[in-house]
Image 1: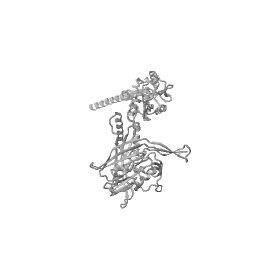
Image 2 (image 1 turned 90 degrees about the vertical axis):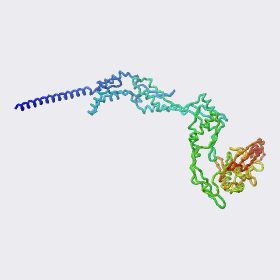
Image 3 (image 1 turned 180 degrees about the vertical axis):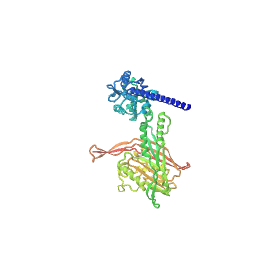
Image 4 (image 1 turned 120 degrees about the horizontal axis):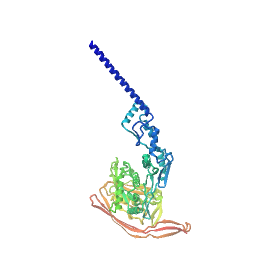
Length: 602
């Protein structure tokens, strides 16, 4: 019985304690809810604790109270409603009001952002930020808001005023003397750099340190071209004068590319360095001129008569090495400027791409490669002469000469008359220059003569012209011409190699240039022209006027052209593959003085 009583008494005591604990818990919960409600009610229109804008504590303040406090503290020196932003360069400027550019302080935005902390509707986010705010300070910075597109448009408008093309300093020749143009400054407003400067000086600046003076922004302008000062003018002229009368030659496949002193000077950047744009442009033209794919050979001929119906030699594909060529040009210019001993002739750096079908695969005559090359120019020729050069080159081309056989130019060409397609052009006959069919034939014979010299073949007949002809001295000395007419006035040679040879001449009527190539099999021979000499120069004869009643009185018509006289000689030494002399051929030319002749109306 006592145990039962004791148990009841103990249970009653525990229940009493539980009720007390529950009551205390409910009281604490109620107090917490009440405190939270009071806290929320107080801060519902105020900033939560530890809220700072810049270095001002706005905790517990209402938004308008915080704004007033901040404005009093800031005491702005810039009037965002009435002040202007000016961007300038020298005497050019452009401006716009801060209001139009929407440049203003972002105090309202910052206040809104700061007040949003702890005032979210989402309870988890709300109390998460409140708790975090009690642990850590919430700091907000003031700045400027702006319309970047409008500001950049303002910069672009100033750029239209500022930018100027200028004029590069340049070098040019006046009567063979170097002159330098100092050029003119160019201006280029840099939009991105000007924007960055404006952003740093105004838009990203602490508002408390922003002054009206900061609203004046000098644009960032570069000068890609600067005019030369007096010292630079003198230095540039000295550089260019070292290139005067110099030239650089690149060779490839019997061709030459000659870069003149004028072109070399254009590669100079003044006052120093090299003009990459000009050089790159020159090399691009060169690349387009030279680069080509490989092409296969085609050679069709009658094996009995050796009459050729088609002859197309193979061509290797070519790709110029632009970088190496540029470096070669730069090194050449540098050496000229430094006055060092230099080489002025180079093989053009390039890659060769072989053809699949070579000339050697098309025949069993031994016509496999070029063994001789000659070239000439005929600038200022009249149209009929140009036509005759092309006609002659076509008729001489593709003649095959057997080993040991003698070739005759006149025989290969055949009759020269209007009946055979030749036109009237100037020829030398019976001591005078006159119009007759075939003028220009000697351009081809002279070119073939040069290729025979280069091939080292045995020339058995060659005669010079009676007087100097300007065409044959373009790019050459007097004495390397060969006249043909009829009979013994001929150009002849013997094929003294062990293989057949083929003559191929081609003319370029647009550029007034031609070449002759001799194809065969090289036996290793090579030639050297030695003991070249010219002497005995005499003046042209006095002009001759011939009365002609068919012309109006006093009217003049030139029928012959003057030429000074001169003598020339040289020896062509031909060596075999072992360097032993095969033969030495002496050539002598004596050109008479010639008078200009006019028909004169009487």
